[in-house]
Image (cartoon, rainbow, N blue to C red; front, side, top):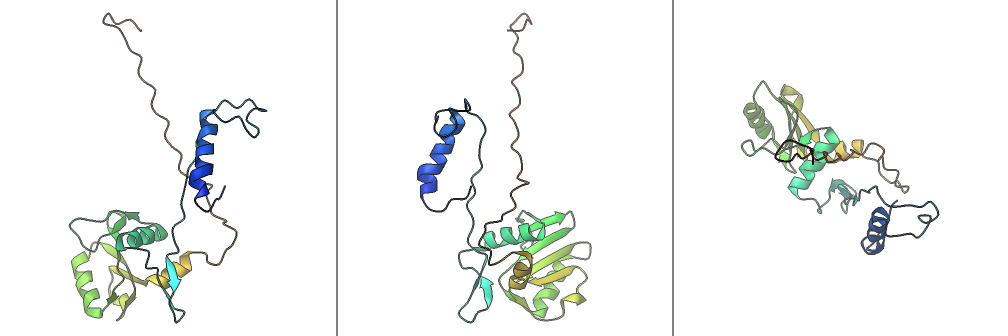
Length: 189
């Protein structure tokens, strides 16, 4: 189900929890002899990653801080978000040698040269930036993408039907069964 507004917290979540606990016999619970069980997942939609400025240009929404932006772009590009403590340009990875760097800066040709040198020849880096100057194809280890164009090509816009793909949600792991306990003589209790 999809709910908007504070009543999700005041009405919907408490009712779902009571149904799961078997305490709510309203609706069809009594008719089908519902005794409780199951669960639910609760998601809150984030604000739009992009917004239009006063000239109609797509820009990164000001509600996103740098870490949120990096995490969102990692997800869009199929990378695991895992910022490095030692490599300032490493915000995530897709393999042992393939990394992603996200910045809202306008990168100069010289900055791309220095970034390419720091990454080295045996690794590759996807650079997501606000804009860049120079020919990015001259760097064998860098792929440079402009953030708004990249996001616009990956996201669906102007939908009013909430057609979210939630069919493949990860399943929660069931807790492991407790091992049989034995008494001091080795007999099962």
